[in-house]
Length: 414
Picture (cartoon, rainbow, N blue to C red):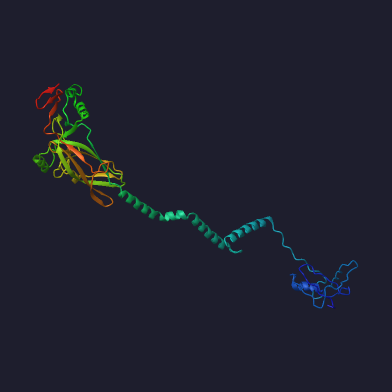
């Protein structure tokens, strides 16, 4: 290179440094050779260590560097002295390409958010997106899915809890009240004698059976019904009645059975308990006699009871048969309250008190006898009276015409 120095080549146009003596030598251009050798990649050549870049380099008159003279063509097929062409710039993308680029950028952001490496395949991105969506749905609907999967066990536990709560309830409650309706034939028992004014009023003012019945109740009378005539009862029961010395008046009461349980409770047995009797305190009897035998709907029993009682007193098939051998009382589980009309017959001249024990069963495998209790939680006590055998006064109504007659003297008030 005839003592000329080789400057560093950068990525731009090569810097041409004139020779020491201010002349440009023709022939092979070292800068062009360097450009061709390294392909314009910006690689740098270093000048030999014995050459110094700070030597004075004369140029033109104005101090500028002299341009190297163009080389003649023909050597190795290269054009002489032509400077290397500038690197081609890529063409500017059109508007649609810019939109695709924006979408690609958004997709890249989503991919990076999902933890995908840049350049991942579309299939990989789709699979990852589906997995992430599935995880998100499970997170959002976790409680719903859990409830759905656990609903069967939850319902079972709830049913068991409800069943236990229902089983711990009192199976049923019982209320007893005297019969208020007027029977077909009746006897009114008072603890005192009637005054002349009261007797006259029974004939002149309350001059019919219903009026007299209501007026005597206001005076403190206790009504009794005639014992039912069980014409169709079995012979064994009629034989018991014939051999007994029990009275012929029935103290009638209504017994209602209620239950708040959600399942049914069945009462299928009855026992009379704790019977205590004393002499009747009645002093006056007023009767409205029956015009013939009569049957009454409900149950009938004696105090103390005969074998098989209570019996059915309805004028139907099974009259006189043990009631709980063919019938039962069902309450609870949406059933209406069970109501019974009971005719209890005490011994002549006695006033008795007694209790009731019933047997019940339920769906919880419970079968037991229980003593009925009143509203205060005490054992239920039912009072049953009969007409006194030593009454001071005894009166009877004659219907046609209406009059009140004393049975002992046959004197009548009209």
